[in-house]
Image (cartoon, rainbow, N blue to C red):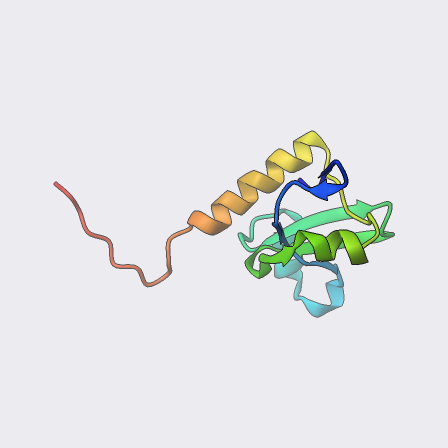
Length: 111
């Protein structure tokens, strides 16, 4: 939510996630399929973004905070907006990424 109230940001910081052009030649065929099917938890595939002219991937493990003043001063309003369905899909994918269990985690039972 990057809206302004009375020309001032609503928040001091925004959480951003970097977007990169999706370049298929960087991946093997099974990884390309997994990316396009959105089955990898740390990558969100965004096909055919008209305003950016191609398909992109969002690296969910690269989320970071940035000053809202900096964003509004230097980005001049350029931003990517998702549809309502896209936003809910993004939130579900981000939740899966952030709440996934660690690979070597030893589980205990509480019986």
